[in-house]
Length: 455
Ligand SMILES: *[C@@H]1O[C@H](CO)[C@@H](O)[C@H](O)[C@H]1NC(C)=O
Ligand SMILES: *[C@@H]1O[C@H](CO)[C@@H](O)[C@H](O)[C@H]1NC(C)=O
Ligand SMILES: *[C@@H]1O[C@H](CO)[C@@H](O)[C@H](O)[C@H]1NC(C)=O
Ligand SMILES: *[C@@H]1O[C@H](CO)[C@@H](O)[C@H](O)[C@H]1NC(C)=O
Ligand SMILES: *[C@@H]1O[C@H](CO)[C@@H](O)[C@H](O)[C@H]1NC(C)=O
Ligand SMILES: *[C@@H]1O[C@H](CO)[C@@H](O)[C@H](O)[C@H]1NC(C)=O
Image 1 (cartoon, rainbow, N blue to C red):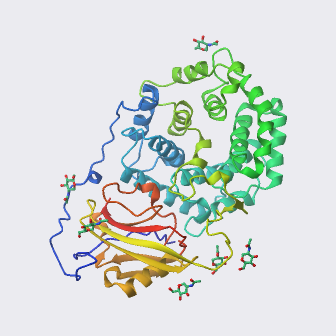
Image 2: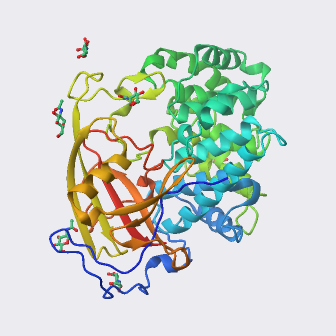
Image 3: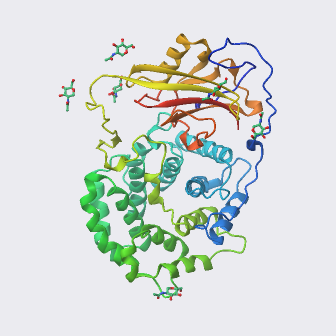
């Protein structure tokens, strides 16, 4: 089993579009970048995050294993860390390269899960957790190294209502098509909320709130009101909803529904959770701690769908979605028309971008980025590359003379960006391309960056 991550490193060379390629040893590879530190500070400049959340985040980091994962809870923890990082709670979450390492560990876990699925069947909640985590990392779970995890998830409809709602939330979050039959089942659960467990109703509301973000289902908005009120009214005198897990889920489900304030006491629910925190910052285990972090920081699972993953269409939700494959009809009009698109392709070398090179290429829409790389190489020798071929695609190991050097942790990372990369504002790791060079199809206005840096 081989997984092709686009990553590679180098031999000595320099890169500058206007000059000839020359062998060089003037690049100091021993640079100490932030990447070589593994510290995580807890800063107090993020007011939205109370002490409880900060302590919980810090505790999660202490629980990280040597393999950068959290045993069974890697996806839940990564989701929580990623949502905290997105909130610009600088200093609260691990450095980007640390997230990257944990994310790679999670990918390994997923591959093992898929690999062994004949012996150990994959359960819907397991897969839903991974899909949500991938989405929070801006990786498309429908294109996990050529495997459609959402397809797998939707293939066997869960019998258990809670699991079903969780799986549907994961699919909706990945902007996949949610079938009418599935929506009807969610509405049935919502409409008979009193007959269901609190966690099931809360998860159903989360799933439905995701679905109504799709303009085609906006009319379902009104059907959320009654079940939401019914859920809010199940608050107990202690402020909670039976236990920590339920309370965390309800806080997420009812997040931002201010019109419900007269039906429950949110402050009391938060206080209930805060009073359950262990002195070391934990809420029992990493999984539950992650759930509580989402609840208390008001970054529910419901926000993942709207995360800014560098998509071109910031007004995404108003655009047309076709068969769950969300495609925005571009301003150029006719989508089915064959036309050329123009993209830029940039190479950066070094964490401080000591060398750079950019070219502009026009090619038919739907061309793979691998083909763009070949075109660039034909036009300009600075873009020369070598790749090995694997069953699931090309693995680029050398670019512009810089060859993979795993021992030194020097990697080429491929980014797909909405604008030309600027060394003074380098792209976030969320913008690393979610798929390999063969599966990445160019669109008008794309800017690609291969950045060599030390992780
Ligand atoms: C990269 O930039 C940082 C901060 O500006 C500096 O401390 C470091 O020495 C630089 N590294 C190299 C290799 O130039
Ligand atoms: C809500 O709960 C908090 C904390 O338990 C309490 O101080 C507050 O008075 C309650 N608010 C209402 C409107 O009951
Ligand atoms: C788009 O272009 C195709 C082929 O050029 C044409 O058949 C189709 O009618 C066009 N659709 C629209 C909406 O213009
Ligand atoms: C697309 O670009 C190619 C090569 O630059 C050119 O030959 C072709 O005519 C272009 N096609 C369209 C529809 O502009
Ligand atoms: C690329 O490098 C050249 C110097 O080699 C510098 O003048 C230019 O500003 C750099 N451009 C970018 C986008 O980094
Ligand atoms: C892209 O190309 C593939 C095969 O070449 C085709 O099946 C697919 O419909 C194309 N997609 C678009 C958006 O043009």
